[in-house]
Length: 145
Picture 1: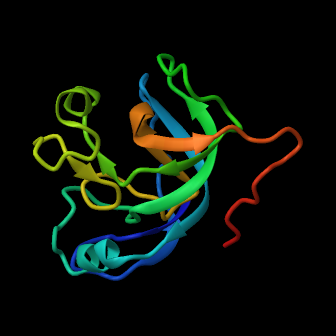
Picture 2: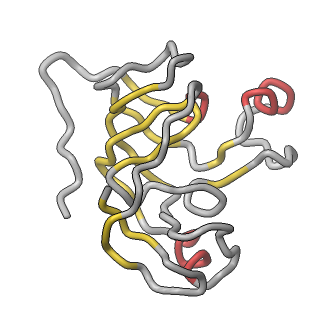
Picture 3: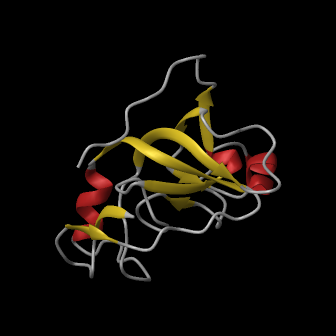
């Protein structure tokens, strides 16, 4: 897939091809419609924090269209419009502590600890998306590079 990515950190963004991320059984993959560069992306390019693996796709903020879902996902289907929640914790942590809880060690941020939204595709756990069903006959426009 095409993405803005980092080959190292500290480092500079590059536009190019990276492997498409795999979709697990309790996750969904979305085609990016919009992503925004914010302060998290600036810090990652400076190595604060430094991603554990490269290439790395930054991007904490994004919206898109569900392209595919894992076998255990029941609330979303291809064509649904979604917004990614940048704070990703486990479903168990949400049940125990509440959504976006910074008190659970499983907390990860899109674009910092896991691949983010600056590519053609982003994969997030099913519980880390909010959205609305696509209206009949309506389709979002994909990112144009």
